[in-house]
Length: 82
Image: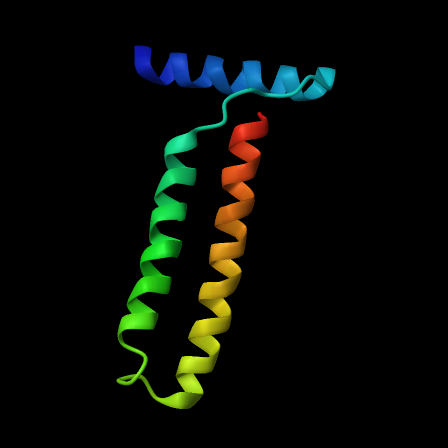
């Protein structure tokens, strides 16, 4: 019961902070790191297995991996700036 009360209080504090217009500074960088590693891993796997994937699927996977890697670079730059 005490845990539930603490979670509720934390949620209310966040809502109050949002209502006041102040930024919430609870950015968890571990999520960013997991995404960055998975984006680069997908790119590496696609490069290493490019001959085994059908050409039609390969194109869309390459586009998707390129977008993920570009976003990962954006997250890296963002993490240096903040």
